[in-house]
Length: 165
Image 1 (tube, rainbow, N blue to C red):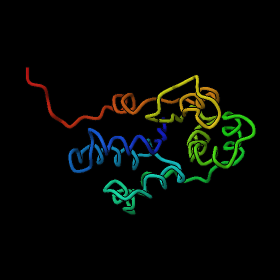
Image 2 (image 1 turned 180 degrees about the vertical axis):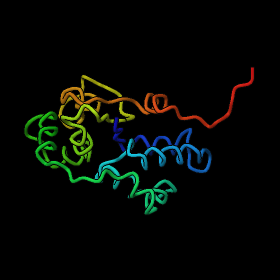
Image 3 (image 1 turned 135 degrees about the vertical axis):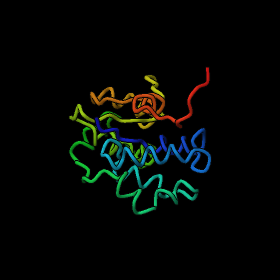
């Protein structure tokens, strides 16, 4: 399985429980899976995180991290258009800004059952147009997705501490 990370997966991890300086083993674990080829980010999504101005952005700019984490393939613009169609017709420039790079993430998994999107967005079936959430668009495109917590559990992240009984 190839897990394709949404920008919010790493941003939320860094801003929350897994800050780089607080839990460096989490980031080594992400990098390990990236180097093994099981965790990647499309270039457009990677650039969202790298463009920040915090320690996570600095971490993302490291050449080793970039080489390991970035998905080494160009976006299939036909698939991106297929995903964009799920947001509805008549999208404005403001809508496109609101949607952001999400179509590139979903398109990278479209038509490939060995790929799964990992996103911190929560399904909200009532949203329409540019306000649609990644899980709902994934569902409409028959793309597998999961939450970061499920991803962390599935790939069995641990700090190595054993529970004392």
